[in-house]
Length: 442
Image 1 (cartoon, rainbow, N blue to C red):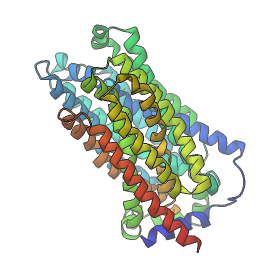
Image 2: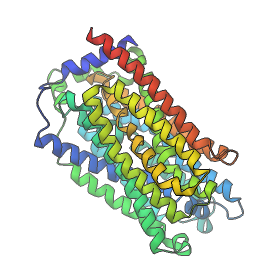
Image 3: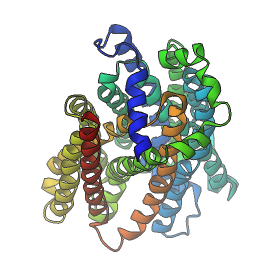
């Protein structure tokens, strides 16, 4: 992975004025980017919080409940499978035309399908066309989100001093996690306000209609952002012209080691987000008989602590290095979810503290974007991060819900054991990064 080291040095050398502190302009960019990311991620994930309701509305009533759930998670997973194509296309033009333009486009492509989902007729009205239309909207959402997170990480990284990369990426990731929290809170509120019959009849549409409005608000907010200094310098030096022949080809030809590393850390991120946060309320209801309101409440606490953990992880990485930070949070991540799995089989009284601690160490997700953006040079950074992240998310994030929902019926420990193994992987990658960083300093 020698090209990975070269990419990291390129990143450090090309960033201007690296020793300055974070200024008011940096904070404003981080705040607007994080808020926009939160609203867009809400649009993407609100679907999973209503998985049981959507399954009953968009599939035949005579199907077994577990089959409807698997099919619903399948449609949710389809959004992940569409991410690579959307990410590659947006990243290609982001490396050529600019980061901001794609930053604006992604939110528009997310808001419109979310509004449509809120207006879709159900299976009882139009039959099999209902799940097909739902699938189409999820594919559109997946294409949009494929360019959102990588574009946002590159955008904020190229605005702030390089020595604050960890905190900048983690702050944005905290915003993305906050979008999941907003979804959880909205779902929890609707569950308390409306009965099951009202949710099935019409109230399920509310979160999707809200999401469409949120998306338009985000589009308005992002018009105040400016193009990144790094891309402006690339244009000035005509460096962007090197990317005209399809940046992803250069990524695959010259930066394969960086791609492998980025895909592995993304795998860890999918475990924390998809299994640890998004699927957990449904899994707690299925495997342990927890009521919907209780599962959403404890999930909201865990998500809030994950957001705090993201900032803590990014702050730590800026001070001790990404390798050591990855080991620290990897140990906590794997151990805390392992303990949570054991605790759930002995006493539900341990659920809240165990899930809270596990949620904090889920903040390991805040380290992932920093590792990725440092692995690619500016000319192909957007494409490199987007290709690696979205391909890994399509594979691991797309297939994991189906596999976990099938295996958990056989063994309740499946979700927490899966996350514990990813924590071990994080430790291995952290040790490798630490060794590589030590060699570079010699």
